[in-house]
Amino acid sequence: MVHRAIVRFGAYARLVRLDRPIGIWLLMWPALWALWLSSNGDPDERVFLVFIAGTVLTRSAGCAINDFADRQYDGHVARTKGRPLVTGEVRPAEAVGLCCVLGVAALGLVSTLNRQTQVLALAGGVLLLTYPLMKRFFPAPQLYLGAAFTWSVPMAFAAHDGGMPRAAWLLFAAGLLWTVAYDTMYAMVDRDDDRALGIRSTAILFGDADRLVVGIMQAAMLITIWLAGRELHLGAWYAAGVTAASLFALHQQFLIRRRDRRQCLKAFANNNYVGMVIFAGIALEYLFRS
Image 1 (tube, rainbow, N blue to C red):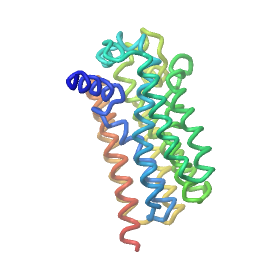
Image 2 (tube, rainbow, N blue to C red):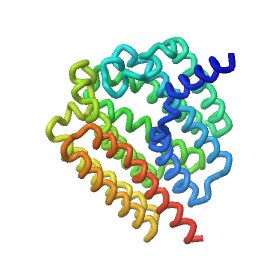
Image 3 (cartoon, one colour):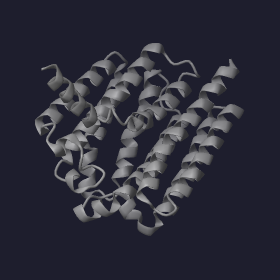
Image 4 (cartoon, rainbow, N blue to C red):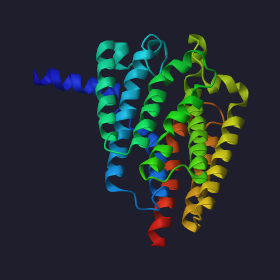
């Protein structure tokens, strides 16, 4: 009985990618940027805890519903053929049920915040849950994912009653560009399989110009996030964080230069450091300012 429960929990954990937390980090970094910038480096403790827990819950719910939507396709893709819904370890109804439980838990957390944040959270939940459908007909689903993954920015500013100043819009645009860039690298891993299955992605849309377009988006993201810092009068520590992020972006361009699947996946994962150093620059800026 205990063994079966452990096996079942393990299957659920893999369904929501707890064994691969890179997605949690990539979703969390824009939230952390915005929490610090919207509060002048001093985020409300309750707001902070809600955003951290909410990030884990919503990303997990998104993985469950994504695998449910893709269950007929994942078995034909080398990277995803071992997912629990494909192997039969988890039933489709269980995936939907788990998504609902996680989603309700996330909404319960957000209900402790102000009304504007609650409304934005509902909109963000719709974005995250409908993303899997975009891959069927929208040629650039990564753009839609970018909006979903960066929705925490307006939420954080709303939670701190800061409205949406120009810096917030710049930060949102930077996060969106960043998401499209790194998820295009991720899509480059599955491009041949996706093309055969009729799945849409920016890796397919951009074709042979994929590396160039990714590079342009990386540059645009770095410029935009620098402008957000300039709008908020951030200084040397912030500039150092953005500079470090640019070095990681150059490294990613080196990794994807031959479009090798493993290297593209490595470039995608390397974006965790981009988010990390930008946040470090923000945190240090406010730490040494006070």
